[in-house]
Image (cartoon, rainbow, N blue to C red):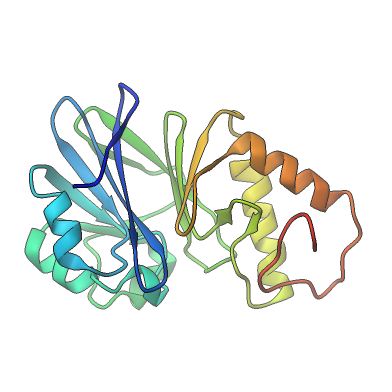
Length: 213
């Protein structure tokens, strides 16, 4: 079993799942064992095994790119719990969601309340989930840079999402991305500042690194 991170308010289990190194998070209330699963990349048996002693209340999908959905159908069928996703992504799921989310909506499980942050740019309906000083960001933000964008306008939109909704959070907020290692808002602010202080091409998009773009 994977080791849990526990801070007294929530328990977090991070599963790094091949073939794309996508992170699945299981977040649980320590008082009630109620939980949610954030993204379903692949390896459904592994996800289900890690969650088997919990009362899973929701499956939450941060966005519908295929590397976050490889185990979706099997996990959904096995658990039979509501699926939640932003309204702008709903039509792209393999099967319709039970709940569509919008900015500032709340998801509650046990004593935990999570706030939905709509952060378009990587995809139209990308969301992040905030509870206390824990921020689950999907592919909106990574250590060292933003998520991939396909057009300059999407990149601009993503920068607005990051600066207006994420970098305004307390600096000690811990950031859990859809791929790779964890980071903090403090580190992300410093990295973005290095980017913002330099000129950039008007057509900038794609895979961007704050310190080299």
